[in-house]
Length: 232
Image 1 (tube, rainbow, N blue to C red):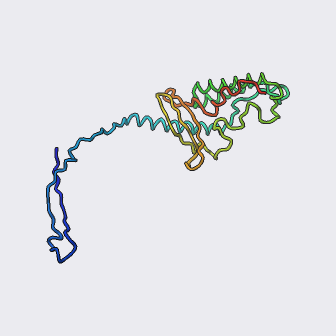
Image 2: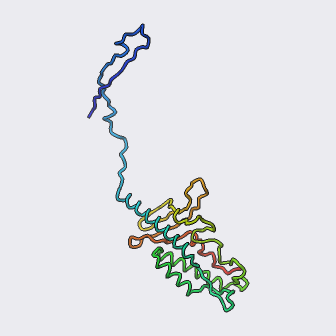
């Protein structure tokens, strides 16, 4: 349908009083103008928004953020030894992984309901590699009194950090979230000022019975294969 819009044109002929009359200076002419632009069909369609999908994405993002914050708060409160050593009678020479203590640790993992079976399997695989590496290493590498051992990184592997802000889990935000079905990959940081150096770490999660669970932590995954060979 074509629209005909009235157009009011005010013509100011001149500001010079000797050349114009009052009527000229305020002469108003009413005309009708056919505005064909209103009848044009848009060249591109407005993309449709799947509000249900958008709502699900927002919900997943909030759940993942809560999961990561809760996990790090738990980790900081417990400060569990991921790979506890077993010692000989001297209590200074370690001979492998203390599997009794390790299995208790796994029970702690499971009780939180934060971790997937894949994470637990990966964690145990790393423990087995460390155990085998220790057993194949000479005794000079296995004295706990020598300080940082070959099987320690000197950092908190969970956050891949040595220093961190107080109660950093409260500052955590997620970025670059990619969700495909029941799998998610993303990065987290505690930085709130983009002008600062940003401490990004990668995580992944899987949805199990409508509940997100951590499946990998960058600092833990880094240890895979790191200790396959004995020290020295």
